[in-house]
Image (tube, rainbow, N blue to C red; front, side):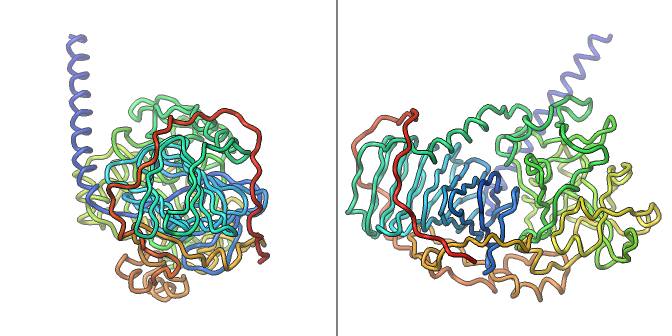
Length: 544
């Protein structure tokens, strides 16, 4: 009897897994028709890194784990480098490099390089996804996964494209040129006629640094979590995987304090279009706070990733809030505070920003095992009461004065106690009904002192795909945001405030896609060790 019962359970589980896979496939296919924004993660920095939020004019110190979105700029000072992680690619910049995100969605990754050196490692290119780099001399599209380096020499009006693995097409004024693996091509001017394609240069210190970073990430297995989850590579080093009955394989962080709780070691920032966004200060603190769910079990917190077979969707913060400006929450001696706790497995996430039904379903079923019909019902009626599991966990709720929240101050330094009576009487919502302030957008008041010159910032570049308008300054959004605290502006509202980037030129649109100019075949390049190659000194930076 036990044998037949076990067999029946096995068949039932197999059928359920098959059903979930089919349902996820249909939802994935439906979502591919939608265009929605995505982010990159500022995953590593060394030296002074300056950050300029979209639409703003004040440069500040870059914050590790900050999500990078459309319109954001980064600048690396002398002897500084940074790394940006995306779902299927990694971008690394050398010192004295200016990089701007022109567009970042599920269908296009488009960045602008006006000075300096970057390496882009593309691990996968999904159907219909475009990777494009805009420079003063050309636009370059990546046609295959591979290892690409781009150097912009502003003083010599030159761009060098080096393809060690992969293949791409350079677009200039009314012409195009295919660059295959094993070639390094230097272009001056904008018509691609002035070019030289010698053998691959020797590896320099920047190349070797990039490859050492690759080795750190390549040793990590994506056995338990999708490799498209941004930041998954840090998990294995900083925690352990454990199988928990009912929940499957979960991840438990190693180096946290006894009374630590998720969403406590970090700060809140405001990101245009996304709303209130959590930025964790721990080196592993990206994936577990923007994907999956948190579970308190066996006297410890465990992160439960979403199902492997579903394409993961990023969320700014997977929490529920207690209080806000619409309710005077008593926190410690303060009469105005806000509190939150992490969502548990099976609990619906309701984005504060406007989304389609397909997106609403996908952002939930990709991050937790949950009934799709239930998710759809919540989408159609978001006033339904949700029973939250983690609100009952001792020390699971984090509460701070409202000023700490709005001013992007470190949460751990300002945690206060909240009474059980306050918790029971306060409303629970997935929207922090708090209007942001200018410091909320910057994330910090700390300036780095190093910024690129205006000539670098205002340099015209070529694009093949026209980017969307520039995000508006926060000052223009602020009045609208105060009318509905905590709710990001809709795409329609944002478009009314946006302006076109005057420093991009879409000349490549006139270029026929085929046939591009051919180049001799070259074998895929190996990456042996080599002595550092000398580099021309880039343009000086300015002091802020």
